[in-house]
Amino acid sequence: MISEACFSRRFLSRRRLLGGGLTAALLAGPPAHAVSGQPLILIDPGHGGRDPGATGGTGTLEKHVTLAAALALRTVLEGTAAYRVELTRDRDRFLWPEDRAEMAVARGAHLFLSLHADKTADPAIRGASVYTLSARASDPETEALAARENGGESGPDRPPEVSDILNSLAQRENRAISARAAGALVRGLETDVPLLFSPKRRANFIVLHAAGVPSVLLEMGFLSNPADEASLNDPTHRTRLARAVARAIDAWFTRGAGAG
Ligand SMILES: [Zn+2]
Image (cartoon, rainbow, N blue to C red; front, side, top):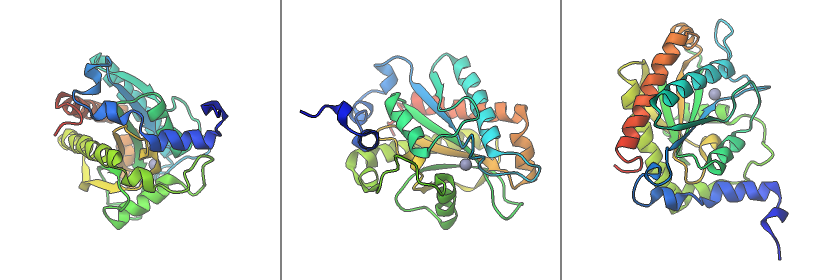
């Protein structure tokens, strides 16, 4: 008899990511928090450690603003007393994208939100944008963004292919739920924060591969734009952003998370 403990970490990781053990519970009937206490929001500050992410014109590192924004969002969400909040990292340390997704499954998150800041060659382009998982990117810019965010290195547990997670029925449903969470985020942000044109986009982001966990990636702005870079370095702006995100999360859960 082969016990689960005998499997390699790689196999276990793939089973967790692709198996979707939480999917049925999440998709069946009432919102998960109705039966399991307060919903768990897992906030993922992008990059960290040896991976600085994008660099702004004045030297701002993406890994620092994502952590600062995540800490602000945790404070705001905890202030509502409606959610449990955890972070994939609360200090400057490196994590593989697939390990972040695995944390979302292992911790039973009800929503996984990965925070990033973008960079592009045109310094005039600015604004926040929201991304969900898709085999086919919504546009070439988003395909290139996903390639950057996925990183050039191969992680130790990187699945050799992702067709299962992109094609299974349960995962299609989870992607639809994630898309509705992304829509709520766009609606929550648009009154308070500049948005990129067509702010709701899709691509194959590895960090969004958590089976059965609604997962969204938020690019909070462009570090290549001076105004966005200044905003992301401003604690007042980060709190405004966090409040807008928290309102969006509230609206999404109030509608029953997965429901229409
Ligand atoms: Zn990033």
